[in-house]
Image (cartoon, rainbow over all chains, first blue to last red):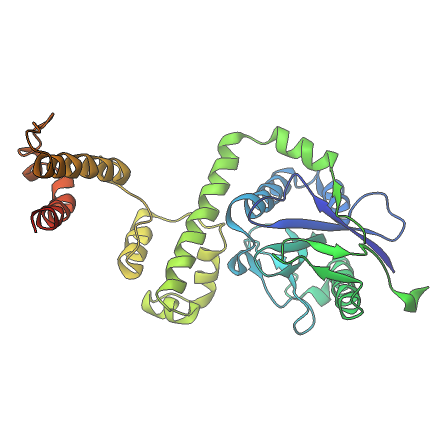
Length: 166
Length: 151
């Protein structure tokens, strides 16, 4: 796996930095792929997600209550943007406190699906975020990647390779 | 060391350009309201569970309230305000800020009249003290100033 961490300027602000990742040989971020995938079917829901992320970046910060926590492995920060049970989409993120999040992808959450394991698409996107979180943790332990002093940015090598997959 | 790579998304740009500003403001308002409630809850030292119990609600309902997606009724806001002792929505005719400025203006005039020999007040606010809401807040402060100035 190879990822590149990028900061989304349109959503980031004084309260939080919103990052996404360019995954393997893609040209666009996981979040852009998510938007492109559902823009036709769920436009108004996507607009709401984009605005909520912008408010997080510029006004409120990534408060814990805005997310469904513990969507990944223990302590890996993988969570989902809080979604109303009536809504159709789920977006997975990795949250690092209130000042930095990485937004990934997600999928359609049919009403019949109760756990993500029941839906292959949701499971796939969730596992990608777990992998990303693990890779970031490993790079931080290797000291090639770190948080800035104020915890608003990543610093260091932002092109990350998982050697196991090379 | 790599610098942060800024990324500009055309898709995000087109979504933000197309969204109705009224809808955007409404989402922003809901999230800021939820954040304000959550801050007040934390300040009061209540866990989400305790907060739910005090309001006779389920934890999942509280999670929804604090998620920034909920459309509160005025009755719910009233109950939360009373419990957390926080002003979420100000229904007074006169905004608090205006009351504060008014109070400061009165206080300044009061002080000047006490400490400046020959100073004549520009405005006489004495009648307003007992008529306006401001007087309830400002009067004790003004008397405090008076005591300090006189001692």
